[in-house]
Length: 434
Image (cartoon, rainbow, N blue to C red; front, side):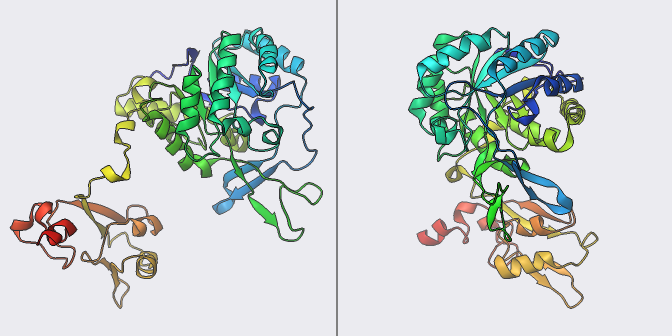
């Protein structure tokens, strides 16, 4: 059996699945239920003390984007950090950590960007016996307007400064949570690294408005006829999260910085993808809110089963394995050739591939009178759109061809003299040379 035990930034946990700092980790009751269900770690919902009091809205806090059959694709929330007293949270963290010593328990913190504020709260948090702290530099709503959260995370100099304060005033591992609401994630990651952070976690939520109520003409969720931008999370943000994790993992300046991957982790496969792109563990929020804490059993069993099948014995063996295959566009192999192939036995003759290709792509699929669809090799550029829109899995696939086998101008086999792509007449450089 694969060993799911992980050590992340010096913090041990029985599996790589942590609950992210969010409503599911707001209090002792929730966290105990999570640990009893089998979660490997928890990042306690963000604590704060200095500054104006935290008062959450007493009304709808979430807006949802649905897919087919009301599947939740993303949740937009306008909830602030914890509005419970700091002392209450600290007492609960102390009790939970004492009762679950084998689980990772990290405290998320957000206070004003002043050294005195951080210096004051850090010893109190450390006294709980928690395993580490996560600096919330990502929250895009409510707190950012107060000069905290994403307002700090969008300024690399501030990230480095506050990280240095925390490393100076506490002995716990320091994880810096980064905001995705920035042009290039590498710069804040480099700043965290320069401030001697033990790790980074990302992504925090994406600033968004998910919908507008066309009767009241106010964004959702609506509070007394008004709405505000919030933080968007869930499966819909996973592609952005994967890219940002990979960017940090393959950046020479941050390649040695441990990464906690966050953003739409719903299945074991999602987790495996984050791990493959350089994450050392993953954090989950939306999936737990939609399906409950019991999904941890599917996550651990699925990941363990896949690792056994592939011959991986530890999470560390998976972490980063896909990073060498992530490259910039300019380094992609332009000699690679593929063509679409349609399995006529599996085809249901719906015509979606034809409509998509004929109207919006390369007119590379023909339709006969009896609605038989065939690929026109001479026009097919292997864009994959037909594969993506086909409702039958594996009905349309891409077949890799050796360079020179098919002349894309005629769809016919080419002369053996053109087996080398550098001299193939379809190669613009070769034509220019002629």
